Amino acid sequence: MAAGAVEFASLLCSRLCHDLLSPVGALNNGLELLADERDPAMRERCMELLAESARASAAKLKFFRLAFGAAGGFGDVVDSREARSAIEDLLAANRRLAFGWLVEEDTLPKPAAKVLLNLGMIAGDALVRGGRLDIGAERGDTGALEIVLQARGARLVLDPVLRDALTGGGAAAEITARTAAAHLVHAVVTQAGGRVQIDMADGTLLIGAAFPAPVAAAA
Image 1 (cartoon, rainbow, N blue to C red):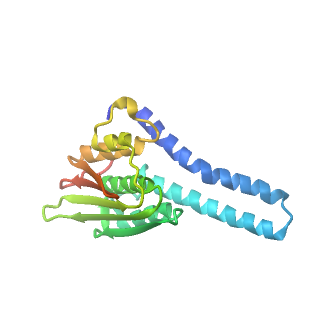
Image 2 (tube, rainbow, N blue to C red; image 1 turned 135 degrees about the vertical axis):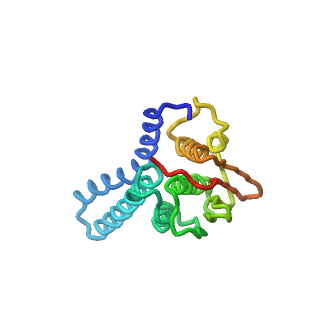
Image 3 (cartoon, helix red, strand yellow; image 1 turned 90 degrees about the horizontal axis):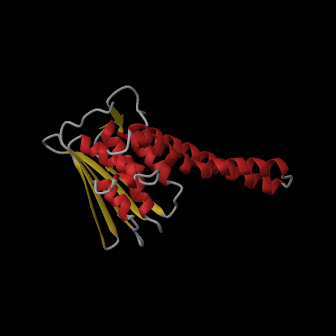
């Protein structure tokens, strides 16, 4: 990756802060409204909005902790149930999006878990009008791990800059907070000796990431 480690870390932090700004800001606004509101019905509605914002904030923090950070304990693997919970909770806010989990492995190497989660976020964002996102992962006879995501919807939008970043075609100057997750996916897969493939046609987006065996443990 061309960007320096410090600069790239700052871009990931910027992405995290950008995504947390909305639910945390809603919490702040809700508390201000609650302090001045006297009508019982309106106070109840404020409490509902506060609860929704709190859930969204917690979901994003849990997701980014696994997708960007060094979460998952001190071992080299992540429980696939933890990864599923993180992506499910992140996508739950989009009620127009159906989600399918087809991961057969009980655990995932940390690098593979990061790739799966970041690809899930990117594919979910591409379904701008909702649809269905299926995520699968399985290990072949040789021990190689393959991750596949299929997104289907009425409108699919994957920015060419994101596509280039995922496949390694993006220039260093194009690394921004918005594309940092895609560059992270490419860097992790490439470091493991694998590659990312993308195909999009007829309302379906397919993204695959192949990890030759064995997948190197994250630092």
